Amino acid sequence: MIGWDFSALEGRLHADEPWWNFEEDCRSALSSAHVVADLGTGGGERLRALLKEVDWSGKQVTATEGWDPNIPVAREALAAWDVEVHRYESERDQRMPFADNSLDLIMSRHESIDVAEASRTLSPGGRLLTQQVDGHDAEEIHEWFGEPYEYPHVSSQQYVEAFEAAGLRVDVVDDWRGTMEFKDVTALVTYLALVPWDAPGFSVDEQKEKLAVLDANRPIQVTQRRFRIYGTKI
Ligand SMILES: C[S@@+](CC[C@H](N)C(=O)[O-])C[C@H]1O[C@@H](n2cnc3c(N)ncnc32)[C@H](O)[C@@H]1O
Image (cartoon, rainbow, N blue to C red; front, side, top):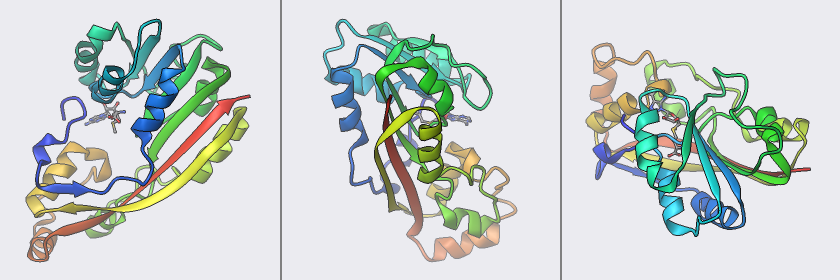
């Protein structure tokens, strides 16, 4: 994976989208925000697409990225917007690289959040918008290959509790289930290589028989689980 790009699976993976539009919600929040951070920006692709669509003059936009190979990718992608990309990862670093009460919008798509830290850095009235992958996403992959869930605790309920404990009012919370369909096992194996944390112990050699059964019954369907939660610092 370079950046956050699934084009290697173009035409071989079809993934439903949630009924809400997270990008539209971020665009709308961004239009009235001044000091903004995108957490876990990947290669900056998502933030760049958003910035292309809003008037960003007068805004100060920053990002964090925790996976070292993607830091230079994100910096280059976002250079035209003067976006500073900080090295930060909530599971590794204690403190977000922002001062108390300094941000009025935090966005995070599919990246773990230290909600207490996010709340510390938001000014009163500031907003946190996140879409997350539920910890029990892609349950079939875990069943087929005997892989334990890496983040079983991640759920909308856990986030609601974390928001409330951190002094964030919950404005919106929704769960969604949909389908992801792989054309064949080559597409499935490519996906597992791009998202290695979904099945860290997976190897083609050890799973040859299971893969043959799946390929004989293609297309291969997997259940996606997502949730969104938006809050405001009180
Ligand atoms: C799921 S990605 C989401 C990126 C971005 N927020 C988006 O929605 O397009 C979350 C994080 O995983 C990182 N990442 C990508 N490949 C990785 C890998 N092989 N190991 C660890 N982290 C990885 C990305 O750089 C990013 O920070």
